[in-house]
Length: 335
Image 1 (tube, rainbow, N blue to C red):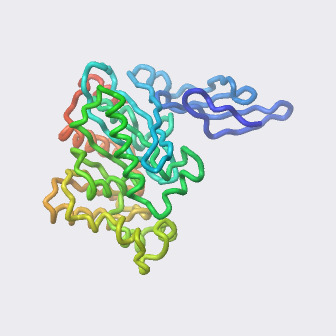
Image 2 (cartoon, one colour):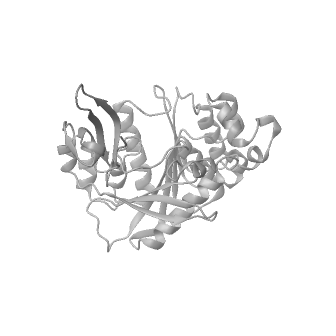
Image 3 (cartoon, rainbow, N blue to C red):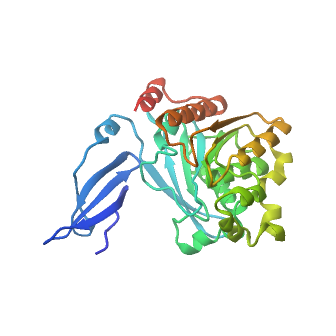
């Protein structure tokens, strides 16, 4: 039988067992609740929590729920977004906007507990988070996901910028003069594309982001996927290879950027980071490069993850300021 989706949050890791009566076990999580094991009744209309590893600690924090909104992009497509407010939120104040871009691209932001870009660690300094499921995401069906073919960077980036405009229009507590964009993997690709195509952001953060499509084709473990996305091999020099390659826009690089890589990354090898760094230094763009010797495509170890988040928070504070209370920042970091 199908399982009904919960009103908030999501189920994952479903398992069905039992000798006489089928029992469905799953994990449940949301943007404010870390994953816990639950038992579902028929069709998932109700659940009983079976574990409680982190729920109590999370409940002690001021974790704001994610709010959904949609808009129609310039191509007539419906685009889903989530907005996360900072702790101790005051609607009468103005808050900087941090735009987060997910990886994939065939994935999506969800009402879930995320570790790679934890919503609450990032909002704790007093930022409003915008999470956009740009064209190519899995949020609006197969056609929407496949629409990225032949337009791997410009179309998604246009959605990201349009989403920021829409959020500023809808929510008067967003400070339009203080915006930053950040992403990892495909989100890092988009951050590097934004570097060459707009100056609207005060700063950028790019983890495991390609800067040279051709170098990525020759060194990544995903070369075939890149050919599909670009409409052919690199030597044919089709439109995507010529016009959607961030390094070709290096003359436009202006925005301060934090660049991070794992030295053991085979998906987006560190040569992309070194090439990006060289271009940034050549253009005298304020920038910082951090390479984690023992990490791969993800920053996984606890020690490196803490260091990564500290560098990210320091970079954001430098260009957006800190509007959150010190108590909330320290409490979130301690958890």
